[in-house]
Image (cartoon, rainbow, N blue to C red; front, side, top):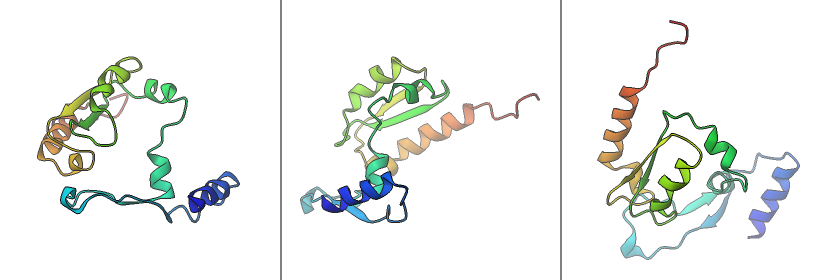
Length: 129
């Protein structure tokens, strides 16, 4: 905890060079590990996972063509809350992928299929053509 507070103070005055230092270790029982977990978080990674207190403008700024994927078995966030929350602020599509965990979504085959299908539907033509 002291390292986290120290890095917060340094970042507040513009010193960001130490953001890669670990500030959080996650201890999970060995039998629950599947190799996809992030068990050590740097200051930068930890802060990136913290939404700002006023997150609504960021959700409103998401293009309607955005795709949000969350694992049904996410241990960090309540997967069933994503759809209703995003629907209040954006037309972005939210999909809950069955059986996938918070880190497992990064390696799930269904994730890659969903992203590929979403990518192929995007209109990537330069504007004005």
